[in-house]
Length: 279
Image 1 (cartoon, rainbow, N blue to C red):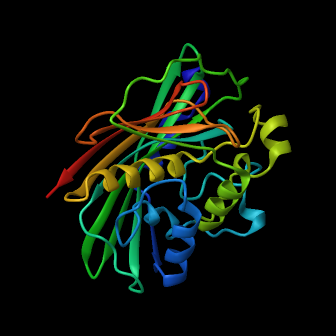
Image 2: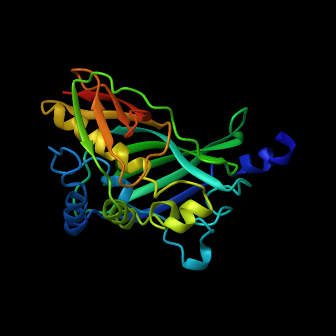
């Protein structure tokens, strides 16, 4: 199988850069807060995770793949595997962005890694470093890992009993939340809004909740639980998809809010996260 994935060719994308400029406008801030209202706790002037709304690819319709993402082979390498998932991010918050001031986003392909899974088959992990700066100061550094895989039938995760937590919040993401978050982040991935495509092509039972949306809810909940500290680093890893109109429980596992989880309506883990703070 290794011979069927052109790993050496894909790795020639390492070092490729993309530069974009964007602005957090008062209206973007208002809409972001309105979208998250009732789904998490926010105690910062600028909600965490709003950087994922900035400088998103703005290709025309004929430049998109079947899944609604920009076609591969431009900035992202032409991985010959059709299914895509945002697997994880490692984020460092240095300074909060200013509203109404241009923000530079530099994205770099940092690595391309091939793995063979006994369960999922061939996997290609593309590591992307995103650096957000303003007035020549680095604000946010975000190492994002995208995984590409073969199509496979969806298998529901086994049920688990919810374990004790220091704090928890149960929500039910609906289609309006998913639609509004896709609009805020200019995310065309059809698994978040096109039920027929999601079911018939990608094999999921319902619309998929965005991984970064779940991470955004967790990181703002974590920050709200530590009002005398500032979230400095946040790492998350998605372990299973979660779906529209199904209960999602956000959990803070310890008193210092350094270990967090999201679990689905069966109690199964769908995202794990860690947080570090500074005074």
